[in-house]
Image (cartoon, rainbow, N blue to C red; front, top):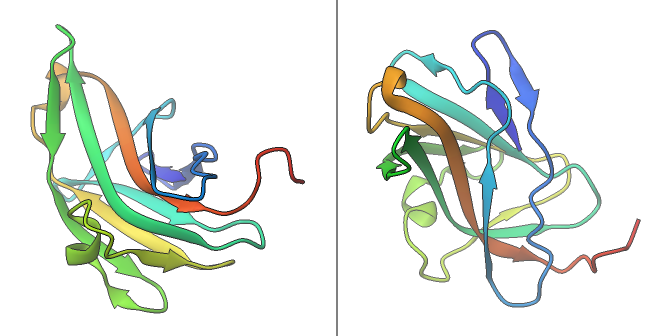
Length: 135
């Protein structure tokens, strides 16, 4: 996963969705996630030789009291399949395949002002059949 830091996409890390059935993973974003034209931008990239099957994505802004605020998904664009927003909105088994070298651009609307945001949690539901421990 990569996050927009205000000047470029910064590598955030690998999301461990290696499982046979769908799995939900929550990842606390470590890099700066900056607003650009009123939205938060993230990218999902398949960097190895496996295919990930993505069912749902969410972004939460966590305030300084620890309350979670859902940032609505406003846009999802797959570089081969086109617009896939509706497929990533629900946990409904309507998955988007992310094959090697492919990218999904995501945009989320803010749910609270940036000044009230302590950090962000990205949540993904899906799977990748790669076995943990494989190179």
